[in-house]
Image (cartoon, rainbow, N blue to C red):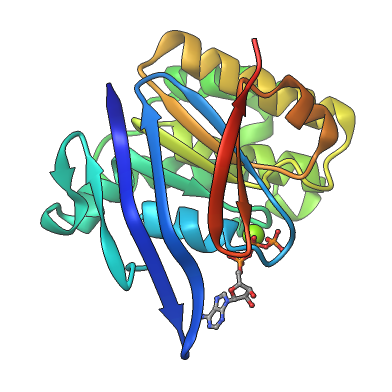
Length: 218
Ligand SMILES: Nc1ncnc2c1ncn2[C@@H]1O[C@H](COP(=O)(O)OP(=O)(O)OP(=O)(O)O)[C@@H](O)[C@H]1O
Ligand SMILES: [Mg+2]
């Protein structure tokens, strides 16, 4: 069953058409990889799916409801978008991981956060580290955890592994496997990485704003 369904999405910005009649669906607990040339419209498409941009025409259904009828804040908690170059805020790792609790007016759950840190090969003592002392790969992992402390139904990863070393990439994949194995999580990830494409279960290509048939590996 599709948890997310996009029908005939067109997007025009400043008189330029960027997306043309894009149809796409993502099933519950499925992982789909999106690839395609730079500038082909991948980020634009997933930002529309994440309700960070609004399509010019076409419809998007999340659990059979038109997303324009849903509260954007609630929707973005369920369909969480992670970018390649995330911004950390505050001073420490803790400041970033307490944020998901603060915005929900909930108490910080230290035990849960320590477990989450372990899924990306970080540890309890990292909580007190200043963000300025983190490597690029550590920053990316902290940012991703911010998306996963409260596990969404869909996680959209926009080239989050680009530029990371092999070990950090492996940590990110371990994290994805952990959360997909333990929660009802669907994942949509954009990548150019040949290794990731080789291991991808299902790949959808976007070329010049058009979705091409996907390929499925076993
Ligand atoms: N707000 C905007 N106004 C005008 N053009 C835009 C706007 N946003 C994106 N574009 C154009 O839309 C096209 C698609 O951009 P997009 O960022 O979606 O590509 P992409 O496939 O994610 O590329 P990359 O792999 O480099 O990240 C590009 O030609 C870009 O210049
Ligand atoms: Mg992009």
